[in-house]
Amino acid sequence: MTIPTQKVIIVPCSGIGKPYGSVSREAAYEITEDLRPGRTQLVPLALLVLGDEESRAVVAACPAVTIDGCKLACAAKMVQQSGGTIAQEFAVLDVYRNHKDLKPLGIAELNEGGQKLARVLAEEVTAVVDDLFNGKQGGENA
Amino acid sequence: MFDFLETTVDKFTFKVATDRFYNAEGVWAKEENGRVRIGLSDFVQQRSGDVAFAEIKPAGTALVVGEEFAVIETIKVNITYTSPVNGKIVDVNPAMKDAPEAINQDPYGAGWLAVMEVSDWEAQRAKLLDPQAYFKIMKGQAEEEAKKL
Image 1 (cartoon, rainbow over the protein chains, first blue to last red):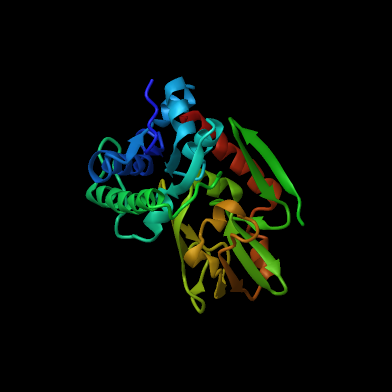
Image 2 (cartoon, chains in turn red, orange; image 1 turned 120 degrees about the horizontal axis):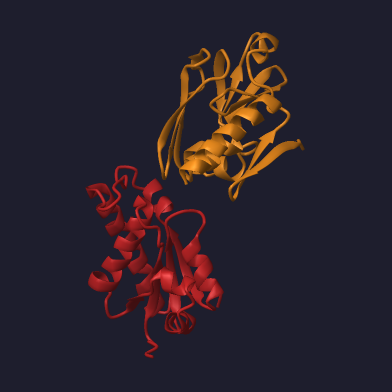
C-alpha cells in the first residue's frame, strides 16, 4: 500500500448517469490527469463507500477536496466518515449558478456546456490545490 | 408556527402545511393581511431536486389563474408554475436571485416566491384545495413517483 505524503486527494460525486455527477467526475479527471497530476490523486467515492482500506488510508493521510453533484454531499460525508480532512468542499450547482450559459446535459456523455463547466470547476479546484501547496489554506477539519 | 400533514413514501417524507391552500400543481397560497403569499409545496421541491435558478415574474405583473408566473430550473428539470389566484404581483422574494436554494431548504417559509394583491380572496380560496385535499392528491402523486424508482 502506498500512501502519498505530498498530494491533495480529489473525491468527486459517484452519481452515474446524472449530468451534475458527471461534471464532478470530469473535473476530477482534468485535475488529476491534466492540470495537476503530480499534486493530486483521485479517490473514487465508491471505494470509500465500500470501506476499501487503502482508499481510507489515503484519505486519512492527505487533505481532500470534495466535489459533490447535489445537496446530499455524499463525497464530503464519506471523506469525513473515513477520517479525512476536507480542505474545501465544492458543489457543481454553485459553480453552475455563476455560469448559467454552461448548462450540463447528457447521460452517457456530457454536452459541450457540461464539459466547459467541468473545465471551469477543475480550474477553481486547481487554485485551491495550489493554495494548499503554497501554504495559504488549512483544512476545514484541521 | 404552523402544523403539517405528513406522509412517508418509500424513503421520502413529505409535509403539507395546514395553514394555506393549494392548487393541484403544488403551488400554495396563504392570505396575509389582505395579500396572498405564494410558494411551492415540500413535495414539489423534493420531486424537482436542487434549485439552480428561479425566475419569477416581476412586481406589477397581472396574472389570472393558470397563467405562468415562475420558471424553476433544478438539477433535474425546468418547470413552469402557474398562478393559483387572480391578482397582481406586488413583491418577489429577493432571495430567489442569489439563494434560490431557499425553496429546497424552507419551502413554506423563507423559500416563498411572491406576494400578490388579490381583490376577492374568499371567492378565490373556495376554488383551491384545502390542505387535506392537497395532501391526498400529493400522496397519490408521490406513490406514483415511487413506482418509477
